[in-house]
Length: 99
Image 1 (cartoon, rainbow, N blue to C red):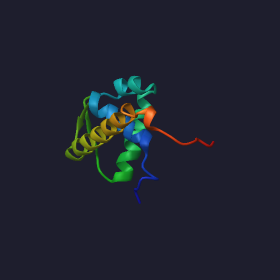
Image 2: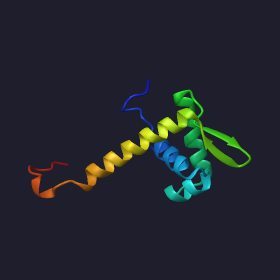
Image 3: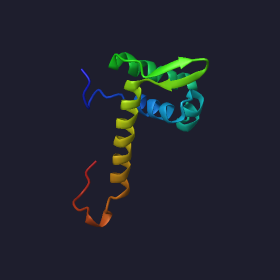
């Protein structure tokens, strides 16, 4: 069952980059991994979700309809996380940190 604890964040990052670039090699460069690693992450995500996210033909990638919906959701989610991280107000943080 897919939930927050089992969500494959590396695979989602790989998918988001591949969906943005529509190219496994550029996605790999973007994330500092090989295109093979990107491909592996995408295939494992497709297996987990039970849907094809890309159409692979003639060395080109094209998002499927489910892939387009997932890319939109992931992009919005990552943008929201980034926005939250960028707008932390360290002066308003209080308390102690115990490690």
